[in-house]
Length: 272
Image 1 (tube, one colour):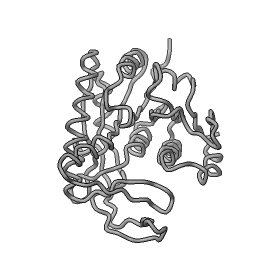
Image 2 (cartoon, one colour):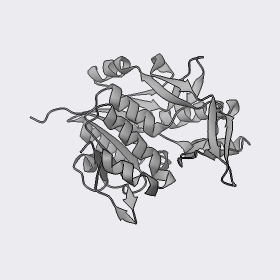
Image 3 (spheres, one colour):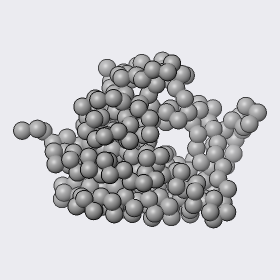
Image 4 (spheres, helix red, strand yellow):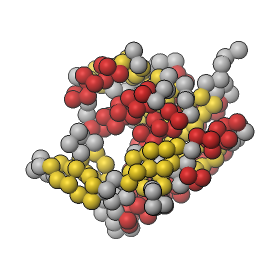
């Protein structure tokens, strides 16, 4: 008998424009043997709706290469509406059509995600100079209400989490979806964290890296591009919190979660 594993899967927004039926079918397949917690992104969807509403989106870069949305109050309202509303419920509907018992949540619900608001952001401007700006409504997850997720899991439900957290002042905050998934995986002591994206995995010097240890990650960081660096940091955070292993893999291939579990394609990041 196969031991039931607890797997946290983050589905990137880039593969969510139309919910791929192969992802939904694979979720149902994996659920027959294991427990799943799902976390979704959806930044492109937020940008699209914000544009339709006439709210131009601004993106900033940190000195270490992280690209993030500058989230003022109005942007946070749009972010909440699109992430917790449109995208989360579209996914809930797609999963329910396959009779998957999913519960859509944001990090605001039941204090699921508590975050520290970033009071100041250090950014690099167009001329390459460092500047300090107001942090807006972005945060870093500090606490996960694991007991709420465990309650759902124990009763056969699949939690589907939007990356919105509650601040110390009880305001909604925009938190990174990859690192949210890492924190949830760590809080649940998950066996595996799978980060699904629209590329095959981590590439260095044009070649797919099939395996990487945490110590090798440190050496590789300067060569990793902006699109992948957040996922690599998330992998490090998850492993440091006790997660068994992390796989960065393609969400557009056939049976993406099953493939990641079998190490077919993708990049496996482990402690050793």
